[in-house]
Length: 111
Length: 111
Image (cartoon, helix red, strand yellow):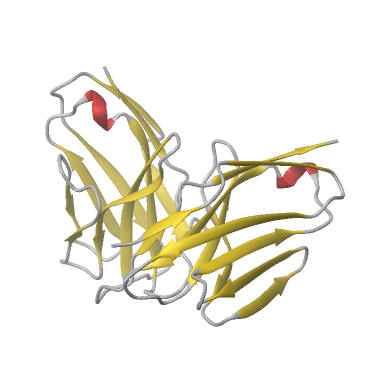
């Protein structure tokens, strides 16, 4: 019972490089979310999706793009990484009002 | 928008009772949730209050007063494994169901 799986677990990027974070869920959830977590800042919503083919901006969307081509996958892209994007990224999913199920996070460092 | 206030840190000893408070401001209210996060781990759902009153789940209880825009998480018979961060979260007033999280309360349980 995998739940929500994030890859990679760790990554180090140089400023200006690009990368894609992958999130997959096997619970047939309609909604998927990307949060970032920084010390003392809690969890802040980057982007979310309410169904296959849809995306929407959250609280801190600048510098990120997302895609939801398949219901079970939600991708988060950084086109030109900046040190301010050093963070722990969490993917989550649910069916709208049900509790969020989180992945184990991706720890990203941008140097 | 939404904002939540909770203490940054609380300390207690094993076997004690601790209360973590959360006050919120939101333009529309659809419930208060609590999540637990152990160091280095993923947040996990603890409880949800949509209506005023107390919800009990084992050693954990959660209370909500909508008129006071206030809730708390009560942890009884504290154990060392309860040392973690605890986040309150409110559901957005927007058309889709997103959660806004507080900055978290770190609970340190000592022997």
